[in-house]
Length: 523
Image (cartoon, rainbow, N blue to C red; front, side, top):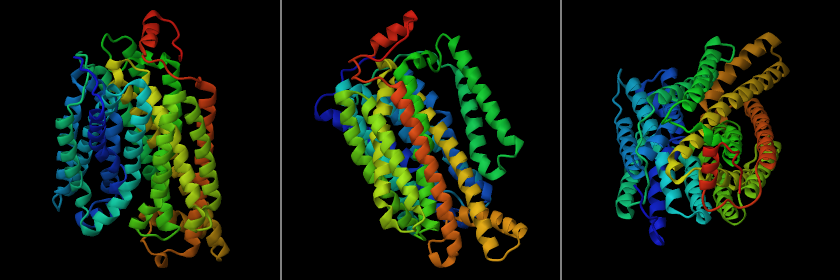
């Protein structure tokens, strides 16, 4: 089915509807972490249960993005957005009504997983609708608003969560209900134009990619609990990667595959996904690590820690709009390279000032780091999706979001290990300097790094020893230097891999090149 794109103001009504639809998925990536202590205390959850309250959502979100994208292209984008909103809102309501007692843990983890599934089938369809309703030359500006506002909500999550938790932790889930209602009303009014291509579902491919992504992401998530020396971690990651390799092989031989793997032969699509994968090692983890830094090293409350992140959000949103316009005027290479470089500089300067324990010396570093990420993420994501044909936007979005979430999970695992390892070293040196024997200092440092760091601070500097605050700041400094280096790597890939110039009005020439076996290139 084909429907003419909406015109004039109706396109921006469609855009508003899609922003409200995906807003819930972005807020829920970070809002729950703020309320975890309250949830655990009231429901008497185990430490494993608490971990899965957060991980179940992220795991199902990552595992089913590709399925959601393909389903949207075959069933219809508008239909999948509505279904995704209803599933997400329904699961949110159930999370808010979690009973106390023995069923609490299984109940909450289950409906967090359902939330993730709803988000996975909703997001690719929503982005595809935005792309289909805006001409190529206008997509940079439109998707700058989409990614700028939606991405910024990841930073707002901790702020909102901090205030809502003061009333009741259940409100962090109930807040999704009015957002979902607004989204459904706007969808009904705007009637978004969509296109679809009915086709059989590749359930074999779905099982392989969901299992591959799920197993390896599970391995990354558990690394902080089991430790990298546990063979089960490497078994999960290796098994997941083998399933993903098997998925690629099977898809090449499937008549109606879940993912047309040949799309990776389009140079710009492959390079942009590589850039996105590298940058997402940083983008989601920075919200978690900076929130911990604000609460532990600076001694802020959870609410103030969220405000700390708003400075990153300010830079991100402003630069995202500029980057989107640069994409429309001159192509993706310039804003992507510029953004990677600015982010690298911002993280480097932030790292240098982190040990001062003074927010005023860091605020412009944080704004610069956020601006760099805003400059590059919107053009990179938009340019990647633009490479697909009109009937494959959902599929392309599913691929890019799978890459982004997979990389974010890897980034959290690896940078989390860097943080804990460096913190343990710093604490050991501090305790030895205070007169403890080295062996006792190592044991105490291990205990402190696992218990006090994971608690996220108590919101009062009086309960956190000064030496621990200093050592946590130094460990965070190391993580920020790693983030700067990662963004330098992303810049190098963009400089070498991307070609200058504006993309042609249609991707049909690249699709035809794939069909004929020629090497597709950027126009």
